Image (cartoon, helix red, strand yellow):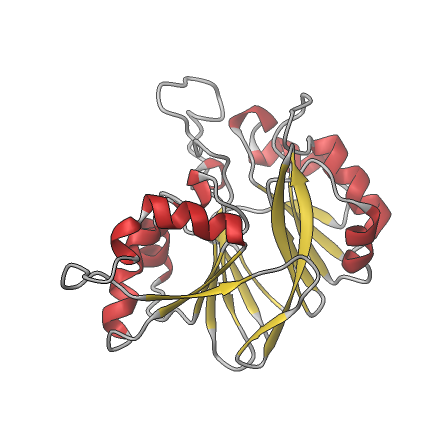
Length: 257
């Protein structure tokens, strides 16, 4: 059994957006309150994995009462997916100051070494967490405990982003194109999580219609949409328009496989 919890389902500014007075940003529906995109995975062997640590990482972890981190996995190096990494300190102390395992591409690690340089120097300030880097490569699976993860490379305009497949579950965010060889990795899924930013075309994200086209091709048993902006519309209204096997994800939603 594997449990997936959506820590955040919003786009880079989250929802509501500072200063916006649209009906979505003013909504009192909790499903329209979206922190930056991230998920928590509890694996069959009780490993605790998180994909992406955006600016809301601390708030998300506290909300879900997560007290263990066996692996922090990155999709790409943009700030809305990495900016909260400093808050792994709590897990570092809970883990008897053993290094925190980070998983990401070389590009991700190069960016982290700039943004969080104090974690990578030899003479660290007392209390700064140690990390152990595990490079993710396009066509190489890797394991955390008993769980095998298969990277799926997608395109975020010109930036390669890693999605991940675990058994019959896959998580894809910040994509606007998936090459055919990577689409093959997404066949026969029980659950697909895919980004759907808004209705109007965007240079680096799938629109709702484009995401639904990908889902129609892949035919997962169930699909959830994430990385949602206020421009997509009210959760309650958009949900009514979706195919039977597709739902909008929302912060705090948990599914068990």
